[in-house]
Amino acid sequence: MTRKLVSKLSNHGLGKFGLIIMFFWLFVALFAYPLALDKTPSSNRMQIEHSAQPMGTTLQLQKMERTESRSFSWFLFGDKNYPEWTTSNDGNMKFILGTDRFGRDVMSRLFLGARVSLSVGIISVFIALCIGIPLGAAAGYFGGWIDNVIQTIIQIFWSIPTFLMVIAISFVLGKGFWQVFVAVGLTAWVEVARLVRGQVMSLKEEEYIQAAQVLGFSSFRIISKHILPQVYSAIIVLAASQFASAILLESGLSFLGIGAQPPTPSWGSMIRDHYSYLLTGEAHLALIPGAALASLVLAFMAIGTALRDVLDVKAL
Image 1 (cartoon, rainbow, N blue to C red):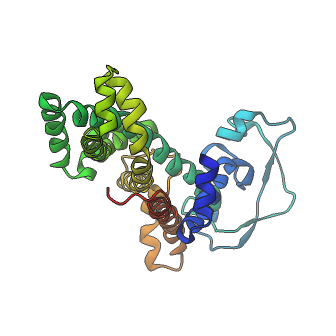
Image 2: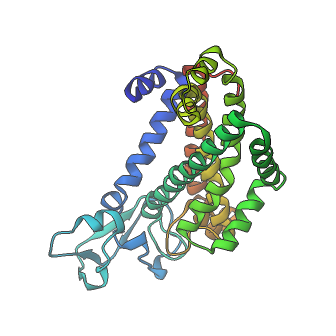
């Protein structure tokens, strides 16, 4: 099923564009430390004397090396023992995207920032689906007071702007990497619940559902086996757009300083640290993470549009 869906997307113009950009950033996120020039945790090796260097700058530095082999944990989290590395003056290093105001390699932190954005998208959308699908299905299928209660909760969440809700939840949970996942996921479930509720309400009137009820099938079996499989196409399309929204929300939180905390690199925090450079000769320090953010969001929006066409989802 997944292979067939990817094949259909690859034959769709927007889908092909979105898949190329998505897989590029996914590859970069997975292999961030092997690809990065700065292999310290969070690529946080500061060299203040080389701050805000232009793209393509070549600098004479002390290159860090290790004598023993690196473990799998280094592949994921960087080398936590980097202060013990030996140093040797063995040549120049080229900073392809230059250095930031603290003298850190911009490309290395850009690669690690992709991990934050993709992680937030995946986990927050997963949380939203886990909450929204059961609540929406229960409201649409059972109706009555259950529908009234769930609809009231949905209306309360809808009455508050999403970004303000995320900020409020972030303040309650505290600042941090994992708190962002929960905060974004707890606000994204509302749209999923509304979609599922509407789809279930229309499908439960079908003759085959009424036949299943007459045969004595349990409500859980009818919902999970006969109704939800008909809704999955619409859910997949919505999840793609929710993914893009989650990435934007995380970047906004990081820009305000209540998202992923330093030294964890995030595209939003990279923009915040360098937006003042837009009026100087080093505008790329803010434009590069901004372009990366825009490309990833655009990719998921394109995938969502392509999924709508491929899965023939007419109404959301």
